[in-house]
Length: 248
Image (cartoon, rainbow, N blue to C red):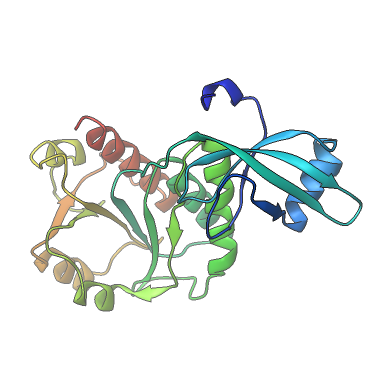
């Protein structure tokens, strides 16, 4: 049976180390609530499950009580695949907007999300576990088979110290004179690994702009004449980059 034949079934991410036929998994409290109280599922209900590594599997809800939900896997319906090798580097912003950025980055296929500190960063703490859960939920909804990994909050300069020169950094510079993103990408081989850098709400300082521009892997780009909110810029840039990558 193929994945498309089961596309109407509920789809859940399970953080199991390995998925295989006959495996028995107890679902999380939130998933138990969803199946029992929202979906009104019953024992015997079929589900689709994935863990981001072992493809997608059909499972049967073999126990659903007031306290727990247990599933048993019985058939693999899709092989594992990976999204495009595109990272997002973004300065944390207000909670709702940053949640939106993480969610949409996962939906649009980013492989990794790095929250980074800049000089004008206004939010200096994040809840990485909550952001990772947002990325997991987005993967469930958008049918991707892998999971966007959210990193701990780090310093941009420190991240650059171990940067692989082959990974091009798309530096979204809203107030500078730079070529359009699409034109810049057209000059790169389609197998080029990318990262997209989104700055803080107040923009990069002049010192940061000079520092980033000096990096041999940095490619300053424009996203158009308008000044975009950070979360809008991330979505716009990633959509263009994903379209470019899929033409390979």
